Length: 117
Image (cartoon, rainbow, N blue to C red; front, side, top):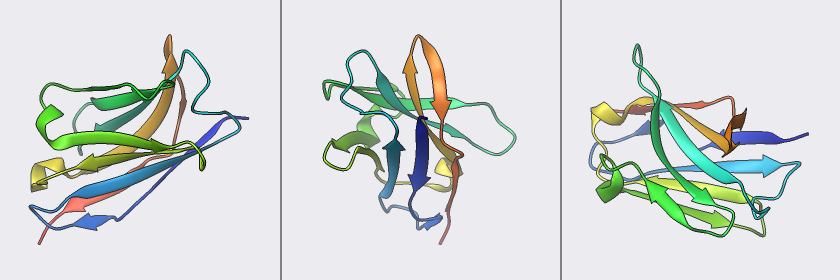
């Protein structure tokens, strides 16, 4: 059974870097043909795709967030991590990790992040 679990701080101060980790169980993140995404949903707004890291380690980011985003992975721990720099209150949201190939098949439960001093 594939499971994804987000972890990280719930509160981040403005201008700091937000780092969130997604731990995957039941499936290797290096399996060909799959993409491991970060997606967020601000309160009362729609889902926003942030970026992904592929099974080969390649990355792709949303153009609107690209300058502040990096996604890395630790294959020994079967984890991938989001780093979002220079956060502002506009980055407050529920953050999800998800697996996709043709569509999103599995999601984590999400973790709330608030950016506030």
